[in-house]
Image 1 (cartoon, rainbow over the protein chains, first blue to last red):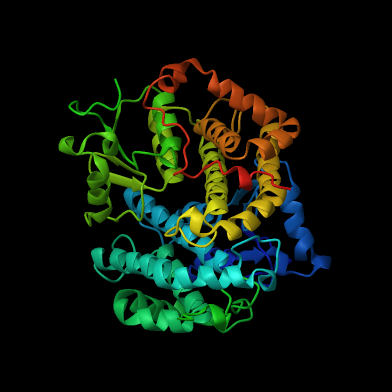
Image 2 (tube, rainbow over the protein chains, first blue to last red; image 1 turned 135 degrees about the vertical axis):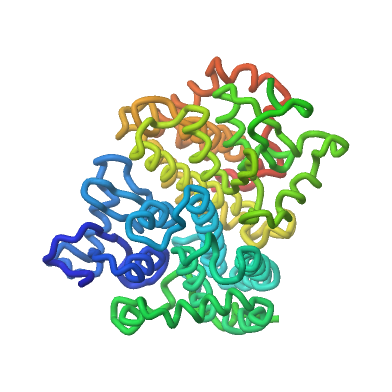
Length: 249
Length: 249
């Protein structure tokens, strides 16, 4: 059972309730490993959820304050930064390389995914996060042309190379890890936000494409993908579909 | 002895030789702990240094390839991502909290510093890293106004809060850590790049200002700061001084 309000569960996730965003990388690991968790901000405010739950966790000075969501709580431990949450959580719930070197490699790769997410987000917000996309459209259009022509092939070519070097099946180590789930989420987000640009690159990305399709069909995630817990991509998150930004050449 | 070409040293740093950039956070930890290291790309090409050294380390498919510099080599281990390098290195050389929770907190904070560096960099490169600043000046001017008005006070206010919550002297734990060095470098970079905007905020940042001044006067770093090993800020790195971007209101 997952995301229940009135059961004691060991892991509590705090993330903006309307978007997959950076919280989804944590959700995928929790769901794929069948780990019970509470998705706190998606509960009604009357049950301690909603935006006020996130505001409370960000405002607390009990230990190192988090700068931003997602935040994972486990007992009195509170961890922010999605890549660090995954690095800490995976050895406890599974989908993690068994050795220190493998865990280092997984974390390094997840941090590069994090860098890519920031760049992908800023395609629709090149000037300021405080402004609407509609208030920075000319700058977005210019940044999108450079992103599609340069950064998208560079990052995806790198992830493809990582898979190829590691034997083709998994991002790091000899078995599946949370990084495979993260690369799936990146490819799913790009297919939503940049269907034309990503479609053109796909023939050059056989391992990444196959990895995406394997995770999309993973039995351990089937119930999750069919449930309302899986948030669809939309126009509020990291990956947004503005046709005018997608390979406008 | 540091940065020597013909001595066997356990740590080799690969980073662009002309800028402090993200490599400087690693250098500060190595220097403050008196750890011998080789700053490979700052050696002459004839001694295996220069740009070709970085190209070689980025091109190697022996293990997980790094996406970008800095890269730290230690034996046959190769680590990328400056925050991860620090997280791995600090328990081996010092300036690290002694317990796992403290090390988690240090890494979380360093990752937030990493996010801030990306935002500070993109003030002068809001459209593309492949373009010169001169080719994206109007967009930079607009982004700079938002950065100075919103993001700079938000991040610096957060770092000040972190210091205050932790007792005022150190970023995490009961003693000095590499995160203190990193916050020093952030404040030094901002004083170079945004002297007006940072000067206006400084009265609201007593702990951050005092931390900067303590690290600047640290006996363990005095020889380094007086040496050519310490690269000055310039117009090629993360922190660049374009007066028109500095609090132009």
